[in-house]
Image (cartoon, rainbow, N blue to C red; front, side, top):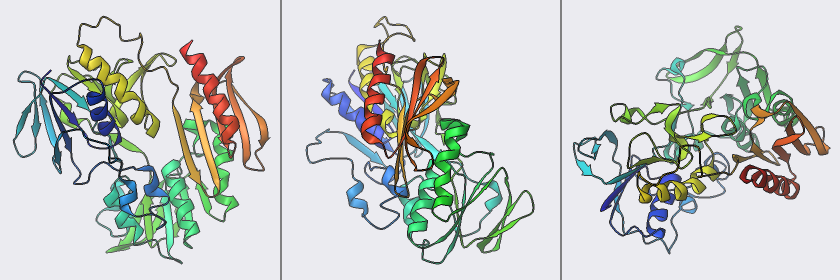
Length: 393
């Protein structure tokens, strides 16, 4: 390969570029990013950055030892992948001939159609999103967070500490039931009421009201919640539209084997846009977490450099680590590893739900398949290592 193009300049794209150089690729390396910023860390956006504890320069992911010798194309949007000519097409019409392509275009925050053009309505995904929201989080302001997932929970926690009046609205009867299961989702979401944040569950949003600036959120049951600021945290959509005519198989993201290889030779995918085959689930599974974006690029790059005739099947080899994520809300570090959906039982094995300090183990039959911790980092670390060891056996 003489030219490899990495489409996406966030965490997964940067780690893919590093892996290419570390694994011996010495050809032309092009990195395309739709944002004007150099790669930066997203998790602090909803916490320390939003709270004013750190500035943007602290978020930089590149270190002084990074010498990628890459051709950076920041503020550029990839609009197509021409598989016949093996070119990445940019919005301005430029075409970059590529022997290999790493798709790392990530995901974008879902918006609320009902928001219209009202000011004061935000999503939180990018550094620019965080800058815009930060200036409106002033003490005494009334904030409504739509969506009680991890981003919504972190924003609510940060805003409450800044002195805002906070309400969280969740359409599902139990917040976090998807990633954590109903029982433990209820325990974790209880943090909101512990800290004086109102939580409205099992009711959707009918509309946002206001003239010019948002003034309230009308719920499906007719309740009107006054609001000076609204944050919409209802998940993310993978950025894959630009691949629609490329021949790359798409589903909930770019569908890949366990090594990140797509249906198109010479193209791999990593990060939030990539749906890697998960043998425990028997299907492709998209993981939107920091650790996956950091760890999987080395696997995908190795498969890219080996070429299409390396011989392994879509279900052999590759990344065997179980999904892992964490969230900091209020004064609690929440950590989770595994697949809650595989479990038929969950037991608290250390601490208690009431104390908000616990270690819970999810099992299918007698086999552990996941673990959740709240302020139990050391014990969780041991369980995570056990789960990874079992997955690799």
